[in-house]
Image (cartoon, rainbow, N blue to C red):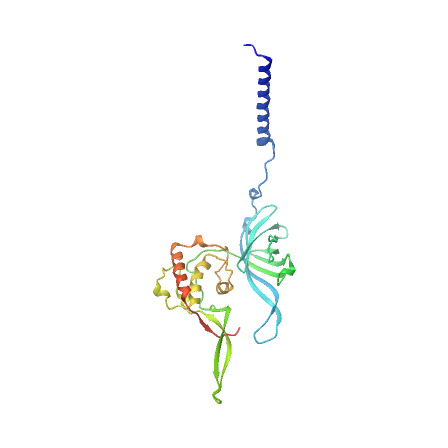
Length: 304
């Protein structure tokens, strides 16, 4: 078969295009270096992974009810959760006051120390510099934006803890069952026995719970209306939030944090545990919410 010059030119063009396509494919699939995925880096020092929980303390001005303002140590609870360590980076999160913040940093094996930075896009973000000693972490935290926070430097003293969900966890009878965060003013009257004169005065009172919170476990028993109908509002709130505390929920509301931080079992690990609740726990939460809506509180006068 005779090939004309025009046909020959066409065949050459097709061949060049085919070679160009093959060459491009070869470069993209074989010769270009693969992009590094930070998540694919080998993990090391896994024995240091876990939750470290303890005191987060700083100097603040304290105003007592019956005395002058003074500077003293204010202690909060904090959790540092180390999730992953590679040659170049440490990944995890901090939890304090119910706020969960991711951090990234480095680990110095020779000094057994971590430098961990929160993102910096929140006024409460800062840098942790802590030293590892067996199962404890001690060191400091310093705010990135010192003018934006009340206390810009704090001491950190933590111990490694193992989180486990246990439906048997309860508040102890030794726990303080007063809600110090929501005082309410009441106008009361006083009558002098000698003069018979009656005067009015304002008293600040706090909500109190009853011992029902030591008896009713909404993670173990299916609650009925008869179990709840005579309870105070604070009782119902504690019984409900005990469910979330057992699952490691980090409470933003100080009222609930104060109750559960008195225990040795409460370890905040997440700001959302809804999917961890059992079907019975979810039903109990629904029932408790119904009663909370209409329940009343009992108030009493206490000194700090």
